[in-house]
Amino acid sequence: MPKSAIRDRFNHYQDALDFLYTQLPMFQRQGNSAMKKNLDNIKALCAFLGQAQNDFPSIHVAGTNGKGSTTHMLSALLQSQGLRVGVYTSPHYKDFRERIKINRQFISKHEVLDFLHLILPKLEEIKPSFFEITVAMAFYHFSKQGVDIAIIEVGLGGRLDSTNVILPLISAITNISKDHTQFLGDTLEQIAAEKAGIIKNNIPVIIGEKQEPVQHVFLQKAKEQSADLQWAEDIVEVVFDQAVGNGKVQMADRTFSFKAAWFVDYQRMNLQTAMACFIQWGQITDRKIDWTVIPQALEELPERSYFLGRWMTLGESPKIIAESAHNEAGLAVVFNKLAKLDYHQFHFVLGFSNDKDLDSVLHFFPKKARYYFAKANIPRGLDARELKKQAATFGLKGRSYVSVKNALKAAKRQATKQDFIYIGGSIFVVAEVL
Image 1 (cartoon, rainbow, N blue to C red):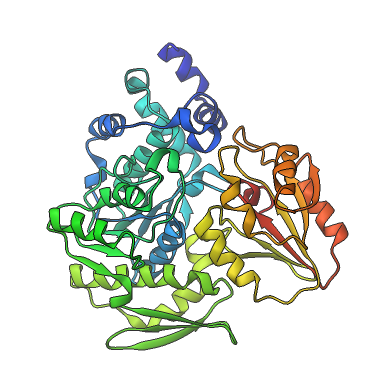
Image 2 (image 1 turned 45 degrees about the vertical axis):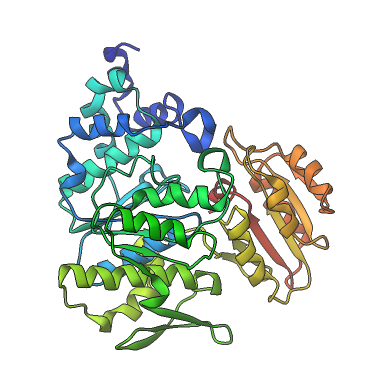
């Protein structure tokens, strides 16, 4: 497309958004065709932007599950110390601008528009993907706004992820499980090797969970890079008290408790990872941490960091929960929690992407529940009738619906006040009900 024609499309924010969604390869919507196998494009964009990614200190967060939660928790902790904290995450739930924020404040619409105008001369030459542009946009925004620190969440993998051009203060890897195997490998060791690609020379790394099958991968990579590696559990221990819903944080020199509606048992390891990174940050920067404000920062996590879609309560009587867990490991911890709940009947509003290995996830769901199958409003969404057919092979019975909202309406009609409604399977299903 001629540059003048592109420029004509960008007179308004919505024009720019339409271009990003419809003209650029986007993994979340299209899948494999949007993937890039090198960092050439993001490096070219960064060069054009004057290497903006080097203008602020950062923390890089990778992992299979929990990296988004860890990122937002770490943001709240750092904000409590009076810092302006940039956060880059993906994908978004409702608003594209969720991906790029400073102390919960989204990048403005005019800044998105201005950025696309800025890089117009390079669009035809570089031909970047949706993700590459958004990563570059985040770097440029954080540079221009002069953030004190930025937390950058990896999109997919690590080694070849577009975010992997930063030189962070700390690298963090939450955990490893099987997901996106078509890109990252079929074994845990192969996936861990891709995630370990964010470990850099002399940059300390925090590993969120000790997992026997992959520990050697991280230790070997850290040794090759002369990077100090620590396990989060050796720095801090987070305990969840099921009876009262309290969290307790225990460190070598102090212990404190907090109570927050968002803190459920499966978030324990994510908070442990975030706390370990926070403590490491204080040591690296020689910053005296004000611990008196930390409990309040954790209690106010959603207000401080735009923390969405993780065991999020949308209603009472019946209880309605939206949950973004979408792979085997994530669902395992969620269903461990569900098994402890006492409700009369469970209702599941479910949708998945069309490249999801359903055999690896559907076995978690109980046969006695009622199911409402729906397709998220994205091209990658799995047809609801096909999902219903495949679910039936696991003994899961229900009806298919033309939309997520219609499926939820049906669940609400069927549920009594003593029932439980779960909405999930995909982040895009959750996004449609928030």
